[in-house]
Image (cartoon, rainbow, N blue to C red; front, side, top):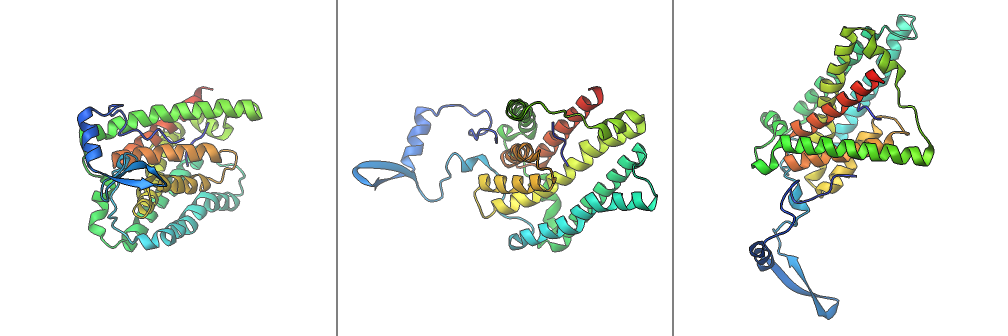
Length: 295
């Protein structure tokens, strides 16, 4: 899960020069074909086959994935209904009924959640391993490929964090104007954070490490990459962000989660490294936890 309180502009590489030089323009036009379209006196410049436009050049995700793309949705459905739903919504209530308790001790609650999310992550990686067609490539695939300094994952993470916080702030202000102010305090989470140092540290471990690693592996590393291998990357970002938002089962936070998913997907697509979106996800959750603990 992601803690909640428009995709970043697809510029040519997060900080590339705003305008092309005369030489760059000459090279670009020399690669174009001049065709008539509609009005015989109107012509347009279209890139030749094989030349990527500026928008498609934003993403560096590989089209060659180490699993069957055709089975993407069946694999995701297996994860969702066999692992995600039971472990997220079925196990803890069952334990509460067995122990005849309506509310767990905060330490037990967060420790149980940490164990269940770790199990969910291990289960998904095992599912991906046994359904993959090239198991040896899985570790390298998720680590990513090294690119130039302009594609540095630290730069992508820093810009992603700043842009995400700005978007969340703007959407929160807009929501306050449209539907009125809303109390974002989470009493259960706040109780866990303030109960003891053990519960607080376990909570940070859960939300700032295990949860980001799980969700980024599933929704960006697997789902987004699989969809992008057969569609345009911005379509893949939108579809995977929709699934990401839907998986949280929170109608009131659906739009905000979708926007967060788009930012995380854009950061991952631009950098080509899963560590960049994991970092953004982790820092964002850490900021929310700090805000809840001091509010």
